[in-house]
Image (tube, rainbow, N blue to C red; front, top):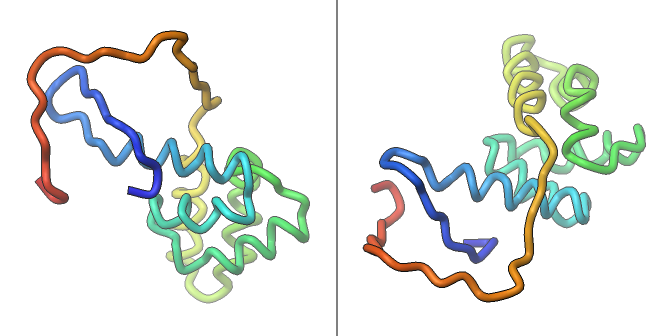
Length: 123
């Protein structure tokens, strides 16, 4: 896992990939050049990493939030062939940064109790 962490679900069926997407988005927010590729991989747009980074540099977009705000222009810049694919990319980008990221550093280490169940990828 690129972002070592523990995902704690409060109920059955909560997908752990959401936490990975958020951590990748945070990484892209902190350093777009290094974090854009991993974030795009988590949202299924890895093949557009280079083109989107060039668009970001040209347009001055520095965060995933700014990319999401300009999803129409970003999608048009990185996919000039298929209208359907461009629409899909636009929708993915628009929905990939749904709100403000926040984090909290605990003063004391978190102590978890209960049942721990490990899952293999795909379970």
